[in-house]
Image 1 (cartoon, rainbow, N blue to C red):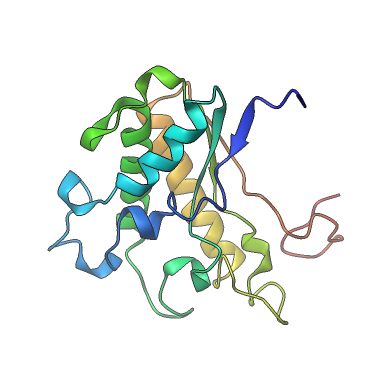
Image 2 (spheres, rainbow, N blue to C red):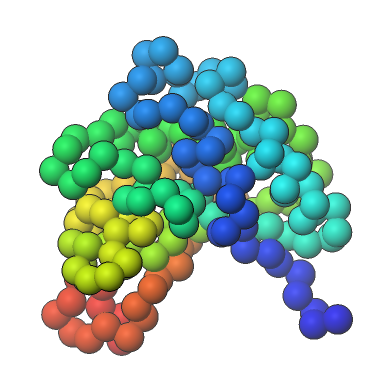
Length: 181
């Protein structure tokens, strides 16, 4: 074998926030983020069991799917309930970490969580073909969301390893919003 022991969950198609919490963020009154009945974990659980049952450790990506334009959020300039999205992400971690809402992965040692994928491919950072696939707001908006999710997850369990995002354009130069020397 190749010696790989960790599988990144981005691209699963089933572990994306908008699949696990299949409601618009402005409907939290009808679908509370702290109510397991507001979530649909069945397909995500089945996919993740195939990973852990083969002995792999998930590198769990918290974010939107590759076919959900703009991270499942309303268009730029339109407010959205960031607090609700942070709470959705936290409850996804709780489901896969401790069994909240019927999860049964507690014995599998989930400890790596990545926040989003390629937000730097957004139209506000890089206008052009294919922009906005994973994020369609500003860098500052992403940093605020990232900070909120990371802090919520670390408050929940300081031993979890939280990082990310997977960057699209790691070769940007000085003076760009996503500078990475």
